[in-house]
Image (cartoon, rainbow, N blue to C red; front, side, top):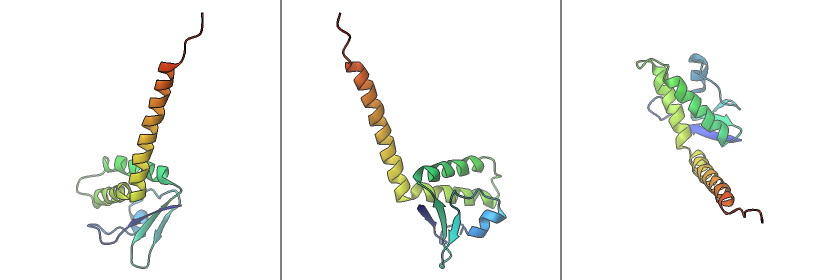
Length: 116
């Protein structure tokens, strides 16, 4: 299980109550609160966290500029994208995909032609 910490010291402290108050989508494994008021987003894996951040960024485009919800959504998406495990996941999955596709193209380029 992946845990992403949203510290209460951010510009807009985000609490687990904000998910109910603003009807925010809840991560796949839910939201938890720590004793020090930090909020923790719970996911099955990094892929789900990236998809969730993408969904939040889509919602941001539909929210009024003056709404406090806009800042909350941006802070959540930024916290997810700045998490070390997410950054590593994105970096290595991108490199892995590039190498895999490159090898597939390389193999097809050097495939021997049938003998006549």
